[in-house]
Image (cartoon, rainbow, N blue to C red; front, side):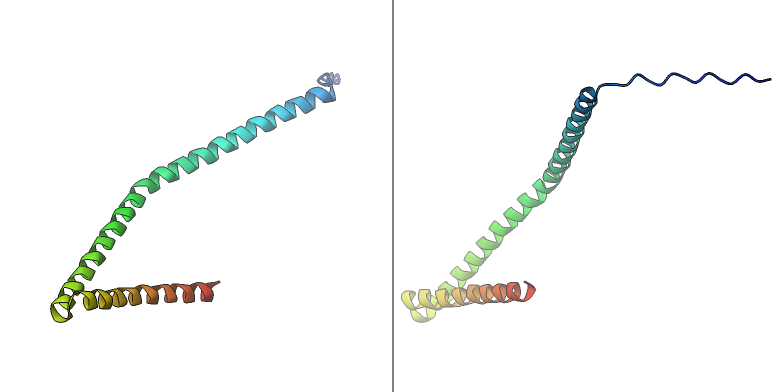
Length: 114
């Protein structure tokens, strides 16, 4: 006949304080790993966005320069037609009106979308 197998001895019980300490240490390690992962993801995204952000900034500066040149061109033509002071006022009203229209439209869209 077969002899019943001996039961293996259960592992010795550890005190509750030791288990709580181990759990706390593992929780800290997990939190550090999660923080390091989030930091690595944020760093990678920041590096990926650095060049496009710089290019967008350069494009905005160049667009501003183009608008200034356009305004000077309009002023020059108007100055030839009506004098310096009146040309400056008309140029200001033209470009101020365009800026105001853009602002009005932006506020209108914000109110509709929100």
